[in-house]
Image (cartoon, rainbow, N blue to C red; front, top):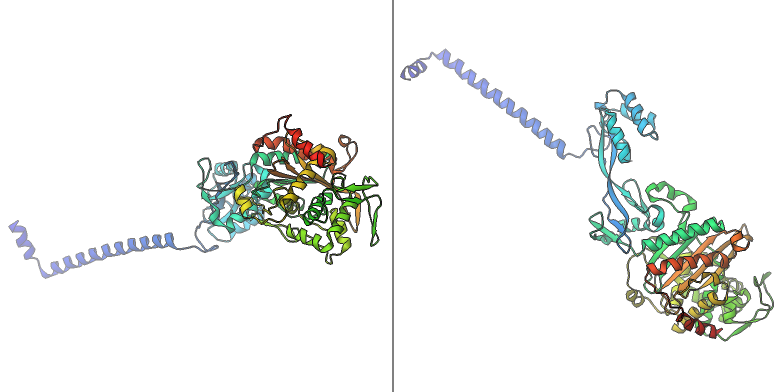
Length: 564
């Protein structure tokens, strides 16, 4: 050791200079390596945190979808939910053979534009989106191709487990999972709606609706059957709780599957309950009679001469199956007398008639959670002739949901309950709603509606044990500038049980035909009315409405018949 130390200290100046240079070069090399590693690390960090603009070089995540809450019916059954789906993309820098890649991808996805894809692959970008919302099978087949440069990005995709069953209420979303219609759009406009989901929900949050999926299915199925039986071009219907205003079911046919959102763009698949306005015919006599009774211009014992047509302003108003005699108010209702309804409206007066309809919300748009309904078409100058024709349902066009809403106070004791597609108790519905008609008027209308099923045009709506009441409407449609007798819009407006009303049911059939099943008749009494009867018989047990025993029902009916 002493010898080595001696040798080191004895080194010449040249040797010491060489040794110093070696140490300097070693330190310089270490510093260079350290700076290189720092540069690489810094670049990686910057790439990791820097936002990449669309179209810029480098890979980037194009996922713009948002996670949506589940949509459930009133019993927690799933109507809409999110699943993870795949988006196919290509990194052109890793593609070996563009033509082969395009050809193989097109063999799995034949709907892609191959020319456009080839052009995009030539543009030098590092990210080319090919197709979103792949099915699991498509994703697996693409993966099996083994093509370098292809990859997948995971995105949320909206699915509707019950398909078209509740489409016009639930609505649908766009490719970015943003709501475009129905409750889906309402959720986006009101994000506070989402609550913690119940245990049976798929997602973490959920929005519960007033719909009952079982009732919704029955209404849709019976309307499908009615369209087939009566060869109608379209149909619509709703079930509403008369006290809470909850919409338990709402259907419009033809409908669409929200899993295939492009179907919703077909103009024939519009929601006829809210987006179409119609002259609904004799169901309006419910409103006419109620207005006259409520104002006191008529009573249940009043009578009007219906023996001759009314001639006014070049128009002739007559009855379809006229009795050619004086009719009492109950007879006007059950025989659906146009002459009698017109004279009741005239006794009420033009101004009071219009004011009553306005009070029931028939002269303004109706707005619910699924959006604003179509605006009613109102006479620009409301004169006596308008009051006469509107009395029996012509000259004022409204949406079917407006008619149902206007009828609620006539059967629930007088309260103008607004319809809702969200849960609401009966107590809350009545407490927050103004009283717009007298309770006595409501009671009289219930008796008249029940009487019409027992003795009048609504006989085929009877559902044994459930005391159905209602009013038919057979309206000729306007073709050009004239009413066309062969093109009818039929409806039946009903309530059950009439002795303790719980639910309103409305059915509308568009252009039903004369068929053997109806003895070649086409009025609402032979098609819309029996459709309601079938619906009530099936939904009453679902809704927990107990039927009256055979010995109990006649007690109420006897009271109704006594008024006749």
